Image (cartoon, rainbow, N blue to C red):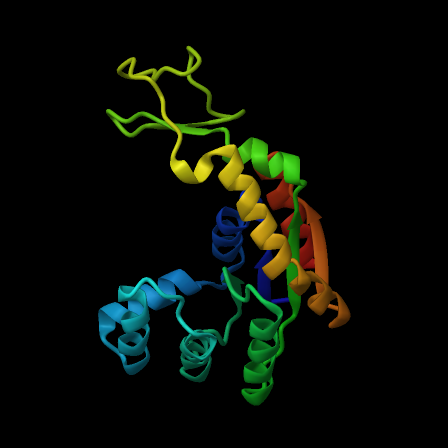
Length: 215
């Protein structure tokens, strides 16, 4: 099992786990955000097209994202395996990705879903704080300040980023359920969906992921 997609709601830890797992098993961690930034920086044709959308604050179209991934497929960059993180986000994207892989004689071995409840997502994301003075970050429950609401280093009052307010987090969850959660059923029907409990200590989640990929 070497070609994987990581799925999960915001706050599930999939990005962190994907990076760690890719390094451990010796495959490429492929983030579409990194792909876009690299293509824009290098000034490739696809990068120039993507930049036009990004500069307007618009979403980069699916065909450009698929094109960026296909470039990595055709140049052999992914030949030893990969973990795709942050894409696809919709069923049409998943369908287009499948067609591209089939065209290039590649298979998707598994779609790994980190299962985390809504309340746990809210608890995690709304429990993130930062110091406006020194920028030190804190999070509930693993990295709390000694005195609630106050930075350990300089005593400044901790703040939440707007994205981490509970109402915003719950809205992000609703968007995820409408747009992205249907992908779970898509990959379940493809018989490659594997569910891993994300509501454990990060080390326990990682151990479960290793068991999955080593089967």
